[in-house]
Length: 207
Image (cartoon, one colour):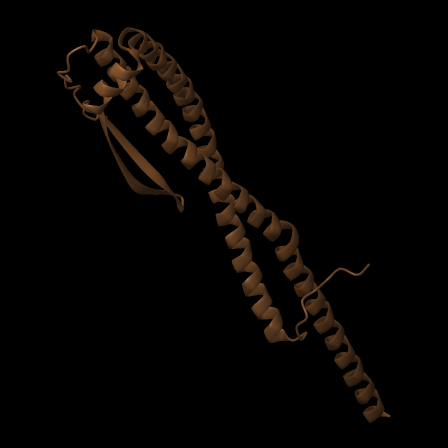
């Protein structure tokens, strides 16, 4: 089966144009390859950070739910609900867009706020302790959410970059190289035919 080439006229202008385009594609391939390598490095860094934060968040949540269970036993569902209604927020979260290597993801900033007493009668001492642990767990979850979204989007971009690199390396650049070789061969053949015809005409002229 004959290898595919571009359907273009085999002229010198076309040859020069294809060579310029092929050089541009090769430079684009090199840039994409560097981007893919940087994305791969970022992905591995984020994976390590994600695993650490996930472990910290799991431990923080486990401790927060343990404290919540104790508070629930001491105050009961009704007392806990009433106390929660009067409690001020324990943290402040700000979300801003962030960009890395052309990949946009949310940057989450979670800040602990001082725990204010509820001042309600019947509130157990464990209630404030539970609020502290829940706020700490929420900070870890906010950070984990940022890293998880960033990791997912970086991996998607890395896969796209890999596909583009492969397409250029194995399909597009070889197609241009084959087309250049085909046109060069056609031009050389045409030049040989021209020289042969000139030679024949000269010999006839001499005779």
